[in-house]
Image 1 (cartoon, rainbow, N blue to C red):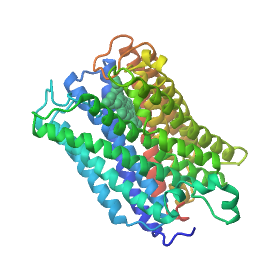
Image 2 (cartoon, rainbow, N blue to C red; image 1 turned 180 degrees about the vertical axis):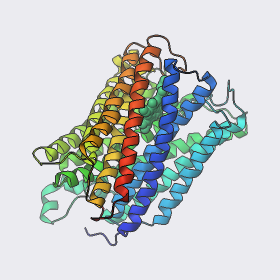
Image 3 (cartoon, rainbow, N blue to C red; image 1 turned 30 degrees about the vertical axis):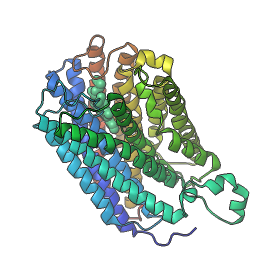
Length: 489
Ligand code: HEM
């Protein structure tokens, strides 16, 4: 099926770079917040607990929003190459993100909100040490972020449904179920990156609806303290949104692999039946995997916990295995040159696999009994976020910059960036893993031993990440200022 019209590349690129630059700027700011918290847990300096929880609230939502914004920008551009998209809608969604981030910042500075990003009712209202208006600013801010996200999802899903002739076409149902007839008719399934966009849009709309439902209920409770909310209902909706929002960052960024790695290897990444089936699994299971956050809730039905365990395995494993397998085949004997772009894309796969395996382990009920709410949890999600999503994003950025300038970085820069971002990152997450395995609790401003000692080692790793990223930023600016040699991918 041929597209009716396609957005002009210049418009698509402008939207993409606006989103990516904003996402990376927020990311760098939140990185400094992260280092200040880890150093304080190490006892290198003192952040008073109230301020620590405010910073932790800001860091959690800020980092995830940063990665979502960068990922949505990339996907918007990739979808715009297949079908016409109105850039004004993308900028409208962007305005909601910016307004949301501004409200959240005000709730922290000067508001001192500190009930964390996945706050559990009645927490934002009882036992607070911040003024009530700060809770309101936080709730309105997060609701604006969700609205921006849903505007994006609505636009992309609508465009894909029109482009591929309905949901069956977008999800390549005929390609999988009637493969021979499909091939005889010379039809083409959507390219791999379209599955990343479609699954983000569909699951994003479901998760956003859940998030806004509980968000509006909390805003009503904030306006009228006599309104009562069922805590179990609130927790289910909060995690349905929170888990999905955080997980989708990975599925967004993986589009960089599908489009970026073929440019580096000069080979094509084709849609295959196993790839489509894996994405169907992700579509269905990401949305119900959140039940694994409620293993300890005795009032939650036992059967839902088993659903959560099974869904955690099925959401992650098929798509990781097939994407990584496909990527390794693409690279194998391709003669690919190691540039910053290819290096980040490839090492991102390692972070995705390691973090994913640690997460699946944590979602297995007998392990969760020990690992629940320990530092094992930030260990696994920092691995696939910092060493997966961030690296996929940087890889995609550099593939674009290198392609555009027809140049790449020298060996010294590559070593410095690699040692800092990947080596320092490994040291940073190792501190969380060992502390988690030793039972050190997460979300503690002051940790019991051996937490502070391991936090010290982790802080060294985090500072190395910062140094590596400064080298990366310098190199990105250098490449961006070179004269244009080729069109962007
Ligand atoms: C070197 C970079 C980073 C540093 C130093 C850092 C530091 C930290 C620290 C110290 C915590 C608190 C852990 C605890 O005691 O529970 C934390 C939590 C968190 N971080 Fe990071 N982080 C970094 C990168 C990232 C990235 C890239 C993301 C996401 C893309 C991220 C997302 C989060 C989230 C969602 C939380 C949990 C917040 C909560 O518990 O409510 N971080 N981080």
